[in-house]
Image (cartoon, rainbow, N blue to C red; front, side, top):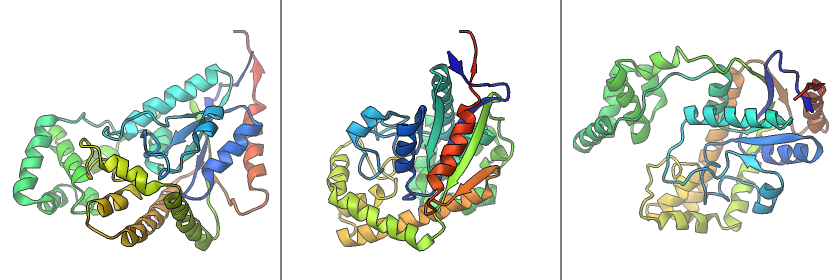
Length: 323
């Protein structure tokens, strides 16, 4: 049986890039030509019933080219970077057991960074602490708790909006449970798995105006495909609300506000497009801070060939090993 030479670590290819850059179409083209397993790195694609707005491939495509870590949770559930690392590591190991090459593709940069560089050891959620913080927020408001966080951990507070209840609560919860700030814990992450070797690519179009146009066109296509009805079905569920991570996903959050009666549909669409552009900007900032990444411009005619050469170089490492 052919396997990979893992003397320097089990190889895994990473394809990172901003939203609407064409990563999903790329990995499907690669899967048609090479023995790869696709592992999704997307914090919204994990949710069932959130198909159009997350850009999932159609059902028939997913059946032919399965994507690991897609449709693994209900929208009422939360998912963390730590859970992703555990799930992705298992998927990578399974891929290698099947003598295939794992290719991780997506735009959730926190997940990529946690997988490549390790993750801070965080305490589990504590219902009693969260209840106390909810009571304080009801009395004082989340902006006041954000002020408290700014005194404790100004670095974290600078990254969190004053009305972002979920992240404020988590930051204060961590401090009350451990006596350490999020910034302190992030500064000393646990090391990544020592037996993995990552070959990383940034799939980033050089023309930002074309990327912005692609974002706008893609959202229009999603609306034509029934995105509003998809969000309406979620909104009709009594167990879902606006503060859940799933509902806070770009596009879903703005249409949810429309269904709540807060803004007209046209304004919701404008906000969704703007928020998606801002997301792409943040993704690019994360990517520029990464090291050991090969940048590829999908607008170049040789873009696919560049990644295929990299994949082939890893596939060529296969050697015969008795099983």
